[in-house]
Image (cartoon, rainbow, N blue to C red):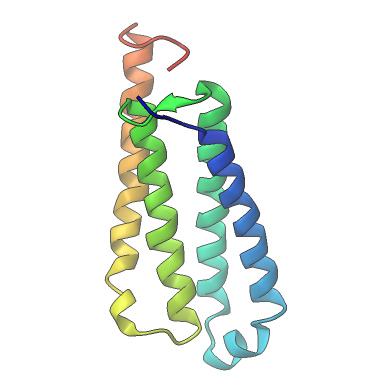
Length: 134
């Protein structure tokens, strides 16, 4: 079974989040100011970085994990959430097609689902259903 290098995926998203923040503050400053979308860009970067840290921490705690495991599913939902939520906001703030609008709440649902799965995983670990190694 394939194992995901979760910490590396999270670190990559962290790198891209910092890059997006810098890009928005410098290269896109004029566009975002003109469109009055700086705060939306900042929200996208905030959620991007927050969940990149969560994915990285999951990887540090669990190491490489099978993608079909509960921690693997958590990482997948957070990754999909970053892409859909923050990605659609990035596109919309610079004037991308409005078709990306409905993707934003879908991304939010992925992020929320990941947190619910993390709660479930914590409960299962507490009850001894899964090992501490995930």
